[in-house]
Structure formats: C-alpha cells, structure tokens
Length: 129
Length: 121
Image 1: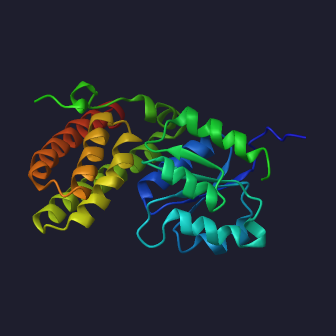
Image 2: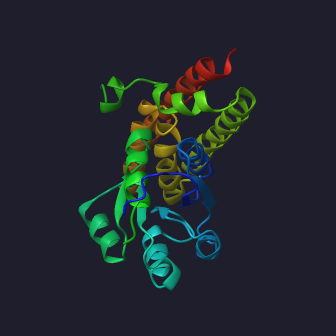
C-alpha cells in the first residue's frame, strides 16, 4: 500500500552548504515533512538515529563526495533500503552511471525548483528500494 | 559580446514565494538576512581565491554559488557561476576576471532585488 501522506516522514539532507540545507528545511517542512540537516561526517550516525524515509545527498562535498558517502551508506544494514537521491549542479552520463553503481536511486538538479523537488520527495518517501 | 546569461533575469521571486508566505515575518527576515550575509561571504571567497590564483578553491566556490544563487531566485548569477566553475576547471585564466566581475554585479543586483521584494516593509 502506498503511503501518500507526508506527515512526519523524515527526510535526511546531507550537504556542506548551510544555505542549501536551510532552504531544503523550509521547503520540506512547509510540505509537512520532518527534515534533518547533516554534514557529511554526521550522516552515518544520523541515519541510525532518525530512520529517514529518504536521504538527499549532495555530490560535491570537500570532505567526502556524495558517491563515496552513498557507497558507505549502502554498506549499512539500516540504510540499505532507504532511497537516496543525489543533489547536484552537474549531471553527466558518467555521474549518473557512477551514482547508480554505488546504489543511488535518483538525481535532483541544483538549483532547486520547489515543485520538482517536492515531486521527487513525494515519490521516494512513499516506497522502499 | 553578449553571453548566454544576459537573457536571464537578475531576480525571480518565484523560488522563495512559497517559503516567504509560510514563514512568520520575523523568521523570514532572519533567514534571508543570514542568507544575504553568507552569500556575500561566498562572493568574497571567489575574489580571494582568484587573487591567490587558487583555481581549485575558485572552482569549488563557484560550484557552491550555482545553487546558493539559483535556488534563491538569482538565475543570471547562477548561470555565470556555472561558467566560472567551468572556466576555472579548464584553466581559462583570461576569462576569470571578467566572469568574476559579471558574477559580482549579478549577485549584487539580484540580492538588492531580493531585499526590496521580501525585506522592505
């Protein structure tokens, strides 16, 4: 059964940009989600603590790139079935292949467009992978 | 010579319109003032990295600005930031100073328009 309500669904956002995290927080909370903002270093513990329905994962982060973070998340039993959508200002064919190879599920392009972002979030928070 | 970014508006209120409607005014003011301050710091870092001939730092900062401007309603600045990132990574040093000037101008005009739209009572 698809759960289409956004109420109380947790979305974890992993990004090194406080500006992007701040805007994601407002957009998603305005749509009824609970949003947890994370740096790359914190995300592995936060996945265990907040049990997100979706992880939004920036690709280009200086400390740890999103593809490597995804690979590590997929090695965690707790994160194996959580949808992961990459956030990126650049989406090449190689990026898509690499993202899928490490277990990602989607790409959301930056700059964010609110309606497109929410459509993807609604889609992925209604299912497991 | 006109660039691809010239046809883009300096500011588009649509990306922030829903957020602005849903937030109490004091929170909106705080959020946007914080954003404007951090946006200015990103621009300063672009200028500093260029002066220091740090191409990797410049490319990374330009990459960040693609979203930090575009997601907040500055499409022209976002397009220029994308060009600046590409030029930095390609080592096109003769393009950098003009692009940084364009970016600075687009950011200042866009942020002024944002301030007038959302922060001026």
